[in-house]
Length: 101
Length: 179
Ligand SMILES: [Zn+2]
Image (cartoon, rainbow over all chains, first blue to last red; front, side, top):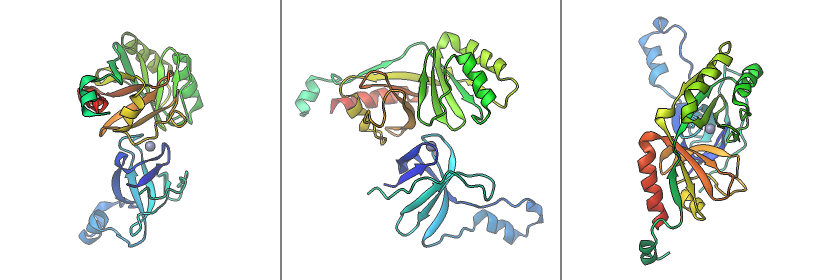
């Protein structure tokens, strides 16, 4: 089981969280101006990298806040957590958390 | 403990009691707004805990639920009046105060084995060194979301959960205490 560091509550078991997919997807300001292809890209296409992945998690059983986690998709090792805010304002990077297995 | 002993001494290790007459208010405000925090504290007569996973005790219990969210446990009779007083004192601030008394039930779990029983369904470290008096955590107990608080006496906990989970949690705790 992963041990995930909530930026507010500290390290908690993976079962307290729900996964929210890739972080940093910005909703287009003017969807009407997009082609179908661009809109589909925003809605459905994700990077799915092998390696470092910045992703969203929600502390569903805890403080219920969304936050970001950087996780390696191969080793599942978590490099750290970060709070969400306006682009470029990420703060509160959590302590490194090791995989707890 | 053997099966035979467990059968002959059911529920001997923990006591589970619903706390009667409790009322609950959910409060949302931005703690960076010091005036709002102070106004709330003046009404409550006690601190709004700003440290994660802690609660303050006094006339009421004020639990930290999230970085801008608290749960106030008070006498059920007093909840509506307190909600009104808070609403009045905080009228000029960007806050939300909701009486959630109907949706919540508090149970007290006590007895020398209460920590062992809780640990069967809860992943947080319940050792008093990590989770002692004044500390609380919203977490999962037997897959149900609960607010768990360590009591001032050793081996006593308050479990606040949605009313619809109360029977389930009591049954789960009773069962967990038997084996
Ligand atoms: Zn949290």
